[in-house]
Amino acid sequence: MNHHQDSDLSQAIKAQATRFEAPTALRERLGAALIKADALSSAPARQGLWTSLQRQWLGMGVAFACGVIASFTVTLFHAAPSEQERVAQEVVAGHVRSLMVAHLADVDSSEQHTVKPWFSGKLDFSPPVHDLAKDGFPLVGGRLDYLNQHPVAALVYRRQQHTINLFVWPSSDTSPHAVKLLSRQGFNMTDWSESGMQYWAVSDLNSAEMQAFTQSLRQKIND
Image (cartoon, rainbow, N blue to C red; front, side, top):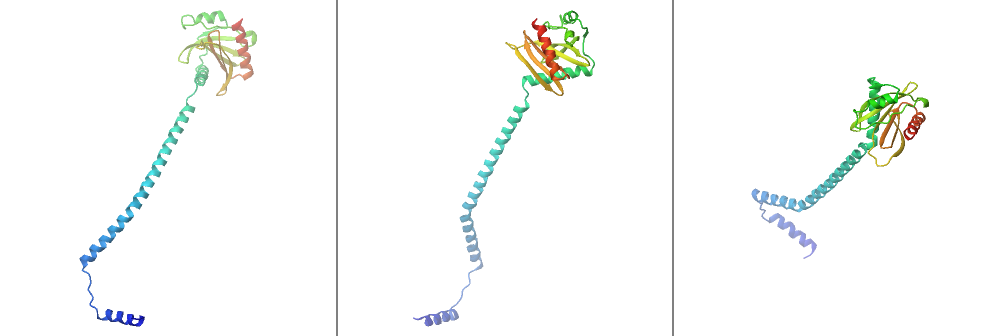
């Protein structure tokens, strides 16, 4: 059978053959079956994509949480002051408080032999008291104060119109430490320990005068 004969036969069948249309219910069942098959075939891919997205979000969440924890830890580390910084803040606060309430001294005297006995019975230690008038830092008096979680002696000195507060209490260091010069909130301070005592001096004097005061006092202590 050649091509022309095959074409003539196809046309004859189309013209003479009886046509049957599938029932509506059958067409609906076949359509539903095809949709379900298509859904089943694509479900693993969608599920794999969702699982991958979940893993990515979980990883990002863990990384973010770790970052927050690390940042919080670093913040706490930097926010927590050292012991020296904490005491320095208390020293400045004690100095400012004495100036604000005009309560520099409980015992007003430039006589070291009057100021020193005044502390007897008020403290469980005897603070060294020296007059430095010859060096330009006359003694004004003394008072009780509270620093570093215990009562301390506060000795008051003058340098012209400037006030120097010297805080003294027993040292917890087994060996003395050298003088340290610090500056906080516009005030200069010196900190050192010797002869079993801890010393903190604070004033609005410049750093050179504070060092001169500290040197004069240490010479008296060690005489």
